Image (cartoon, rainbow, N blue to C red; front, side, top):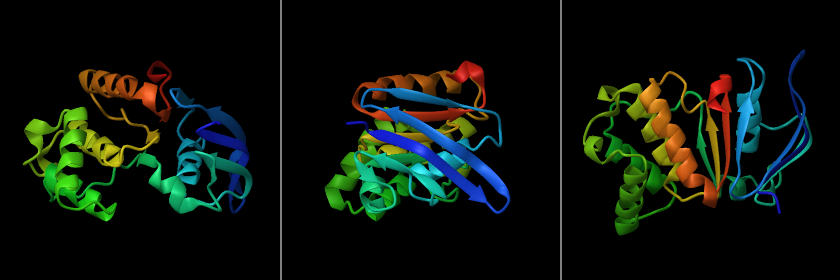
Length: 196
């Protein structure tokens, strides 16, 4: 069974056809590089796959769950880092991750364990007590990836995860993706050919 599958996925905004019949499949252990120029519809596809947008037509499933019929199941098994990386800048990295873990339904010791594991995976241990606004863009991006990993999702959807990062930070994010790849189905969007 494919972990992610789309067939003729399409999205129209008024007179603009943003996504034109996209079809692909990603199995467990695969990383799909979703390459295209800015404005090509990559983020729109990702927002449909994560149930933040409804397709105009076509079908998509994540882990065998239809995105229209089983949106909650899709969200439970998907970790998503959007292009804008929405984090609360006035919170510390640790308090933000604890907040997200609590919103996902975790309590007490489980929150501490999950936040600790995500911080280790994303190399955030040393910056946990810092407010997010004081972190470099690279570390802010890592906080975004860490929140997507808190619930150990089977599917990761990463929208431009290296955008705006310096070469060392890009290398670290790519290494993290490679590390996670054997156990997950991952989609990484980018507008830069050297990223795929």
